[in-house]
Image (cartoon, rainbow, N blue to C red):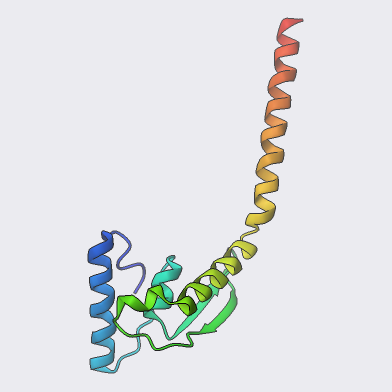
Length: 124
């Protein structure tokens, strides 16, 4: 399933997540679920694979250490939050977000300097 709940509002999305978990458990089926939502991946999965950007490679393979039940309260536990934070950190490091911020600042500085130089040249 590739982003099947992506366009849903929050309430409907949670209802569908619960239904999917109950259906998979009842029918004893395996579901491969693609999502960009880390919280959704943890809630629905027994295992989460984190991919890099192009070329897509698995950079983290995380077995979910707690039972995935259809109980939305599980999202409020410290364990859930900790794992969510760790997976988000992995994504940020892989995407170079920390370096990306420095690059954006440098680009803005260059843009400002270029604009200032253009203004000086226009006045001459």
